[in-house]
Length: 441
Image (tube, rainbow, N blue to C red; front, side, top):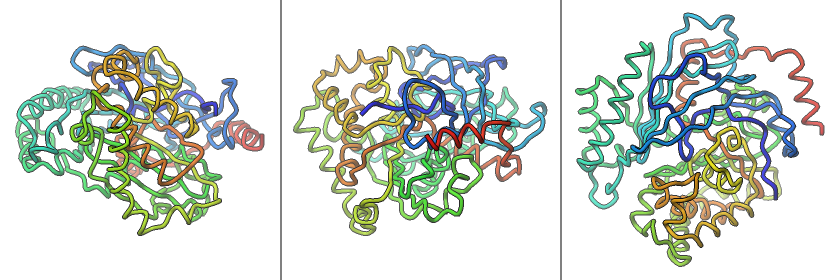
């Protein structure tokens, strides 16, 4: 099955490697971010034409820094981002979202725009905060020191841009570590950053909100998953519960109404790699990883019976994790990770299995040489593939959509909604006709 893409990317979300700017971005190169796409002639046919309603923007390719962060510049494109109906750009306050995960520290700053929100600055660094937590139950001093260095950069960006409103969150590593709350207090005392340790349920809801407009509105069921460093969120959506499904695609509907079940698995790429080994992975150890995840999924399936509920009905997967963006980048043979080629792409599950088999046949050193993997993720990528393999085996599906966006975008959307600056704006003239024509094709 040939991968299909709806157009250039829009968002700065989890992806390998994240190309966020480690410094101040030139305002002339900032981009509006969107949760939906406008179809382009890329020589590929869109599945169902579901994503052909709006166009999004992309970032220029960037180079990784030696410290695990990366440097890049945003560039504007003909974008139709999260719609809020604002009539002017100047003077709008800046919003911030920080995602302190088990493996990454990510910051996104944006202000509302007439067509959505405009990215002001962004930052991402691999900090491996959860390294060793699965064995010791505590955050290590080295991991906390690495994270403090990254948070120092984030604090500087928040102050420099005079950010008016933020939501700063931490996930699984701080959730399960005995000294997680103490570390959050340390961050508050040092940098005046008030970080909230999210519950698994809130994390799942925000992740869905951040990528909801990539859902095919013609489908009945969608499985959204986020494979993290220390946990993995699984969310089932029943789209038939929504009155007007097209509202989800345009950012005007609340996808929370479609959530029928969710689960936070206490396993992610870091914890699984630490348990089974991530550098030298054999077919046997990969199967053991997949089986271990399956055992965690089975009680959830036994409770909700999604295999029977979705049988014969239109459904698809939506993956927001670095695992699926890595698979897409490797499959496309990218010489350097390119968000505009990955975000929103449709993958066939057989192609995913082929990429997984190829990576499994490679040595650790060969995986390092993969441009979309690199040294920082070479020991984690197959653990992510094993989690995805377990999901695909339990709930068979022919297609999966890749979202290079997620928690931070969901946070920004919620903040802007609360402030009343997130309103559905009119599409530009002609867009509706183009979208309808694409869906009819």
